[in-house]
Amino acid sequence: MTYLLEDKVALISGAGRGIGAAAARLFAGEGARVLLAARTEDQLKAVTEEIRTAGGVADYVVCDLADPDSVRAAVERAVALHGRLDVAFNNGAAITPPGPMDQVTVADFDLLYEVNLRAVWLAMAAEVTAIRATAGTGAIVNNSSVGSLRGNPRLPAYAAMKRAVNSLTESAAVTYGPEGIRVNAIAPGNTATAMIDAWQSHSPGLVERLVAATPLGRQAAPDEIAQAAAWLLSDRASFVTGAILPVDGGARA
Image (cartoon, rainbow, N blue to C red; front, side):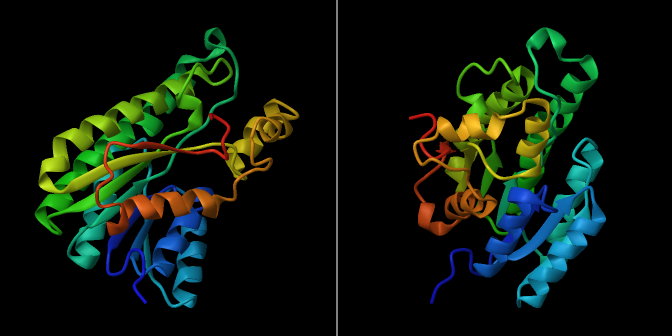
């Protein structure tokens, strides 16, 4: 049996919970040696130990995506541990309360920029450098959002940063494709995560409204989003680059 990510060295940000933790478990189960990165060490340690108990290879590094040096250090740690980097899932993100554009504070806008956009740019630059210098070829997936695909009056700054991530993804795909480095993004819809729970606390009934607008009639589980990222990172998606793949149960169809 050939595993989806057999013998790949994988870096996952935001890996302490939610989609990132599901991705870490899945990637390890599919044969990758995973490095988990996030801010909360207790969460990282718990997921890492779970993966190891299941027979996988996992380590973690505490990483603050708002700190450029911390982002670069996470990539360097993967190479230090395993001698190379093959694939990366830039999943970590910050959230702020929903509301119209004129009510977004400067502090919230800056946080979203630093974590949701600048960190992705920094991570991709470091990951491309590491892949080029070690594995030679590889793949990167960025976590965007279906909220980036059209106007988003409730989350205008969040959506703007994610739309910029889409643009970075496409530019990187064109730039590094000739070297054999593929870059794609996934755009999740309504997913059972702490982020959605936090937004629902500000907007009661949010989940029910999102489910009602989803043809498949339910929320996604974090693992379902991770499955899409795993495929895009695998050699089975060898001719896919520059894609922004909705994983939304048909909500944007």
